Length: 198
Image 1 (spheres, rainbow, N blue to C red):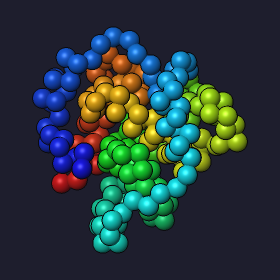
Image 2 (image 1 turned 90 degrees about the horizontal axis):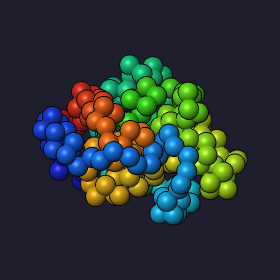
Image 3 (image 1 turned 90 degrees about the vertical axis):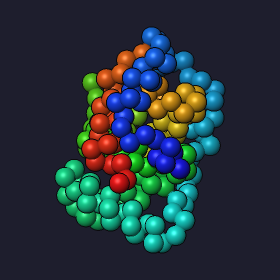
C-alpha cells in the first residue's frame, strides 16, 4: 500500500524532502536518550507474532522474487526464505513496506546477522542495545534475526508515523542523521536498484 504511492524516480522526491529536514533530532538506531513514550509503548506492544500474507499465492510470488534478489547477500536458499518470511511479517505488522525494510537492512548491515557498529548497534537492522534496558527486556538477543527485525521495524514505523509519511525524514531519524540526506539517499538507491517491485 505504501509502495503504490511512492514515486518511481526518487531524485525529485529527495529534493522535495530535503526542504522538510531540519538540523537536530533523535536517532532510532544510534542515539541513547531521551526515549519518547510513544516509541517505548510501540516497542512494548510489538513483542509478539503475526501473519502477513493475504493469500498463499502472494506469499509464493513475493518470496521467490525476493529470494533471487537476496541471493548475492545470503547464499543459502533456506536461510533466505526464512529471513524473507520474517522480514515480511515484521514489516506488515509494523505497517511499513517490506521492500523498504530490505533496503534499510542492505544499507545498515548488508544482511550480516552479527553486524556490530562502532557505536554498538547490533544485527541486521543495527538496533542499539540500550533498548533492552529501556524496555526491561535484558534477555532479548539483538543478534537473533526475529528479535532484531521486531525492534527495527517498530522503530522505523514509529519514525515514519512521526514524519507523517515523509520517508526521507523517517530514515534520517532512524539512522541518527536527521537534517542530512546521505543516509536516506543510500536507502532509496538500494530500494530502487534491488528491492522495488517492478
